[in-house]
Length: 228
Image: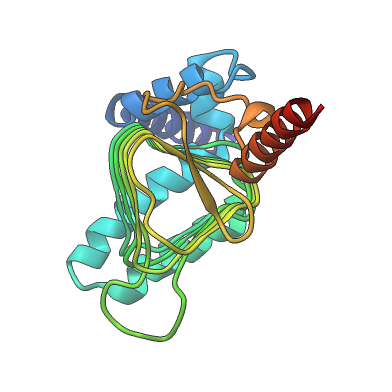
């Protein structure tokens, strides 16, 4: 019985050390989650309960093994993270600072994906390839980019800084900075050339098709008014 208590104390101590190390090493990522998720009530809650952070922690470790050409071990870790979190990040991907995956279930990040700083992904996002070609075949995502739920960004394309990919959009062409993309296939609309707000309300994204229809309707109204 005494040995069992000693083992439990040791395990508890190791768990505390693990939590402390994660809190220090991933401090920026944890704070990013708190800033971008109003449901995050505390620092400890993010550390213990946010699968996006857990997947990122395992990815960082797997990426080290991948860089050492220990590919099997790297993939073993990434598949374990996928099983427990529902988030699949290939250990070959490159991810910047303050990365946050909200909810996370169904997120896939391909092997040659490059993700900048302050990027936010929602559930169901895919950063995927479009064929079986080797080399760079996945997207490059700039800084301060938000990709909405269910969006697919496919192929060796670039998404510029401060851009927003709307929910369920399918992006297969380069996206310039400070842009919003919506629809299937993705259509680009600029928001007055201004940097987007990182809070981004999904329900109020500009749709270029609706804008074009409204402009045509406005012109028709003017023509009808002149004819009368």
